[in-house]
Image 1 (cartoon, helix red, strand yellow):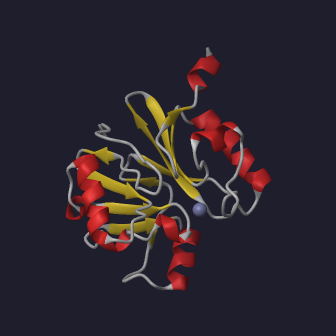
Image 2 (image 1 turned 135 degrees about the vertical axis):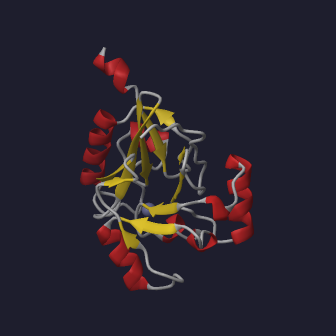
Length: 190
Ligand SMILES: [Zn+2]
């Protein structure tokens, strides 16, 4: 599938938004206030919530799905264990659907445990680069560089190993609470 990133970015506590022609995906919508969520989406992409086809939730922490209700026309997705945990907790107007493997023939759902045991990230190719939307598997660039999990990480050793593995797979990382950064993977290979 021909794909092209129109915009990829995530400041603290805001959604990551990879966009493809014909497929629009928001990751971890975090703003509980629907107006603020819609305003931020518009500021970053010029889109309205109704334009979004799918939302993906990386893990069950509330700050990564508080804004999901804003996307009532989208399909709500998460890895099976994450979907089950969120659905068990209730509180959403409908359930998350299980997603695994490859979404829309373009985006890989990849396990990235440590921050939570069931944490999953997304990986896709864009302009010849491998991009990972890491959720809280990488909080910020500093946490990434220090191979450090956030204070509420379930397994710090596993989180560090996940960062190492993502470092082998990603040229660009979009962390959960910062803007994207380059991993330097290609520099290490040459
Ligand atoms: Zn988290």
